[in-house]
Image (cartoon, rainbow, N blue to C red):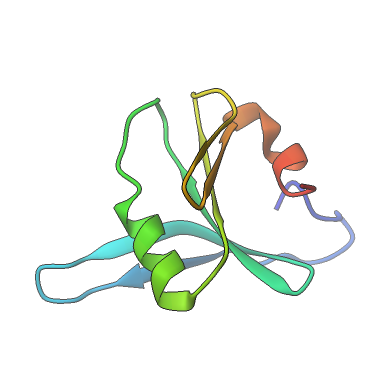
Length: 92
């Protein structure tokens, strides 16, 4: 929301799947142009990205974003950014 114009009303979206023995959730879904980008936010440097990988596979999306205390990185289809770089990440 902070990345968008202050003159437009913004909504937050997330994804949650409740399946037997297979719950999953993605913290945020944002629209950037015509594409939907799933975003995970982690408070530290550790944490699984299973839900994000599941969402990417189910929706056939090219990539997702993870914000954490880690430096810039890339894991398969996940682009990793430090938490302070939200504005920069959505411009790439």
